[in-house]
Image (cartoon, rainbow, N blue to C red; front, side, top):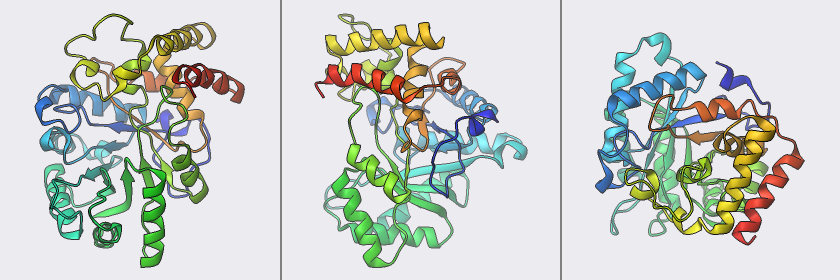
Length: 332
């Protein structure tokens, strides 16, 4: 259970879920891309990942109703049924509901319908966290918040939060919750990594000031920060970068490749770890980073970089130096 106890940091008072969260977005597919259903981990690999996570002390699993068209939630639900209660009683779940096509209001009725489907696929009566997968500027934030609050007060989730929000959207939601007299968001999940080290400064500052949990996803930028991709060489056809580049490929300039080379050399020489583990350790050093959403590698062991990251002791000077390589490469 050591992944929960190593590294003491300032965390929101309600957070008791450790420094890593298992990201289940590659169970059965790759994120919410309909065309990539079946291109992610199959069920045996997903089960092995969840077993490995619990063995390392990771007990919060993060999924979404859109992941692989619901297959991610289904796999988690089947794993919960097949494993002994001594294991599953320690596991907590987070899932997300996304806004749909234009014309659909991101309100209580919509949230309730989609979330009910998630509970059914997961085979549970409640989850720890329910998050909006993205904001919907076409629906007043008050309607979304009231829908989340209704679910929370029903006992079907314990906390609510938001993903992929900017500082303006987050501030508007927090202000609206205060006007409505409801709790509002307690966790924010945005993409964040060394590849863009100055991203989300304002969001992270708000979270730190107000004791909101900040749990970044894509901490390795789709695998780019593991040095698995080489300059001037096409990504392997079945790799995450080839299947779903998400704009990361556009950021891999010669200067960024140079920074990744420095990260790899520093990890091996000074810390005895792979560059991916050092990239995770850099995130963990940030006081406003509550926990990191770590996804599994394609092969077993699936979570070894997370395990190794917690053995890396970084000073403020170490982190600042590492950050400077990538900030300079990004032109910041």
